[in-house]
Amino acid sequence: MTLNRRKQRLGALAAAALAAAAVSTVALNSAGAQEQPDDAGIAQAKVDNPYEGAQVYVNPLWSANAAAEPGGAAIADEATGVWLDRISAIEGNDSPTTGGMGLKDHLDEALTQGADVIQFVIYNLPGRDCAALASNGELKADEIDRYKSEYIDPIAAIQGDPAYAGLRIVNVIEVDSLPNLVTNVSPRATATPNCDTMKANGNYIDGVSYAAAELGALSNTYNYLDVGHHGWIGWTNDDPQYDNFHASAALYGDLIGMNGMTADHVHGFITNTANYSPLEEPHWEVDQVVGGKPINQNGDVKWVDWNAYNGEIDFSTAFRDELVANGFNSNIGMLIDTSRNGWGGPDRPTGPSASTNPVTFVDESRIDQRHNKGNWCNQAGAGLGERPTVAPEAGIDAYVWIKPPGESDGASEPIDNDEGKGFDQMCDPAYEGNIRNGFNLSGARGEMPLSGHWSSEQFAELLANAYPPVN
Image (cartoon, helix red, strand yellow):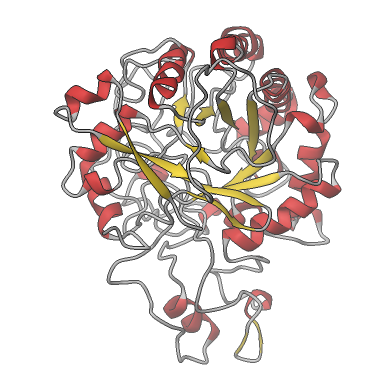
């Protein structure tokens, strides 16, 4: 699948930052970019794949940041997600995270660009990120009513404005939420008090189903629920304490019927959001026999640790089937965030290891250079992954850049702020880990700002280690 590009001016907000330079707009398009209808307010019937034949919105704020970096102009026209991470982000709050553009501003700019698709991240659950601290949100664990009335309802009202009826609005709903209710709650050894609280009060379930129902009822929206990644949910086991895969799919199935949410309100699911898991490991298979037994049946290989998957393509395809078995429509599509999972650069292996020791074989063969698959914060050595692409595999609607490259996952040391963001030791490069990452080093970069804030150093590294390389 190829990416067709056409020149498109950015809005006035980005024009000054780019010294009036025109920036190309990405089109995820298999058969030529479609022209925007003369009347953008004309409603369209929902399509099977919203990215097919579509020009996807380029956030001018991110584009300006990227273009200002050495070499960044080569990717400054890529489409990225717009994160609505606080109530004030709906109107625009002039924060370093979201800038001065609110939801309506982005939608208006999408019309100006002639875009067909715009991507938003709905990300403000009460008690958000219960197993982490770097992206803890503004709403307390019991503030589900505020979440509904002050956050979701205003978003639904704006997205439902007839002026935007001609746009396909993709909503990525609540990253890093529901999988925590499987993996990080009692009696699991990986449980956290905050996740136990959110399971007990039901507000993650309540919030996600409400968001999906309210936003999914609109004629022009496409909801994709976040489902973690293979290094989190990929474990299948008959023992419930080790089964993440089937238990997670069943949990998502339980959403159907809550708050009026139906299967039709969910267009698909997204994996690897803001994470680093590669699409696939090109030099080895997870069930390959090395040293006399399959790798994923060898407890000595801690990198695999009995996981049934070692890449996002196989995981997302299999998890899609499991979600259908739990009540979702058979035509659901998957998205995979490839914004930082390229793992290129000089350290990328060019072929499989010759070792017959399974631990050495995996370590020398794998392109994913993290210390552990549980490491998620500002991973050193990471690179840009596949550029946004439509329908790259059966059942996968698109590779997308939902996490804007260059924006931090969290501060590497405590920083006072009014954004509700705490300090998480997993963002400290000196941290030696916990049970959730197998007590490994965090692998995080140092000198990083608050989550969502720009890091020139990280952007430069992602560009240098891009795979496929950036020309």
